[in-house]
Image (cartoon, rainbow, N blue to C red; front, side, top):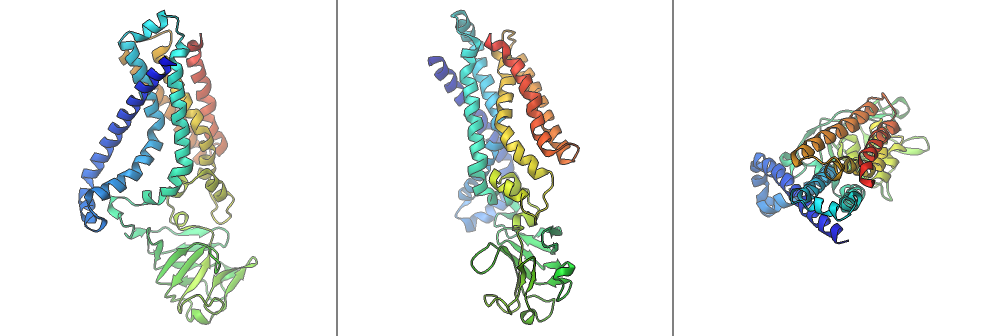
Length: 376
């Protein structure tokens, strides 16, 4: 137990130092690049440090998600190499302590980091993902961004617009192309703006269009139904609407409509599974791939740790710099295999499930083979 505490303490110190150093270097470069935008926004947000703290505080959580596995391996290599450098590893082996006993603390530390990373992906990031949609040039979220036309695959409505604004969830000059079953009053709806509204007691989830120009006289037109539900509500059938407004029901949220990657990258697994079952989205291979990858991620993180740790505590111990070089090579190979399988699944060369699990099927046996000498 004393050995475990000693190694775990050294590895925790190394993890914190490496994490803070990499995050600090990344954020300092980014902050100086965008300092003008931060200074401009600071006058309205309560000061420069408050703006920087909020902006990079959220991104620190995302940075942990992206780098936790690599930094966990790096900290294990540092802690175990520190034992080697001060001949403590040789003393432990001479005292009859097995290699597995020495490495156990580092492996447990890697497992804890993998669990924390999984909890972060499922519980923390989904709650703050909206903050990642705003970069330094759009801190308020009201900058006009380009909008690519996108279908609601359930109603077959094509959503078009001139631009979008993230914070108010607003589409500028929307133009909705309607399919034949919904074209009772014309083939399209043109308006000045559209806002995403979540479902409530008055209406389902969808988009509120204001200052409707086409079809003319929208307030006098009857609502349009399809599939047993009202798709287009007008003031003639919904007294909560203001003059010149109409409401278009859609199960495609604003994040999904504008094609933001944040909703899938930072959504929880239940949300991703629900999106696969949502007929309005027509998801491709990337969402099922991400769902499977969520289950595989902790095991891949452990495989990466078991690929690197034996380089230091294995029977064929090498110098520190040689071990670091081999560790970098192992890490590059690890990510080439993972990214290659994911790219093949995204390109429909292989199925999403195979693309997500194939890296584990390749790397886990390799990690077990690399770690096998430690059990002896």
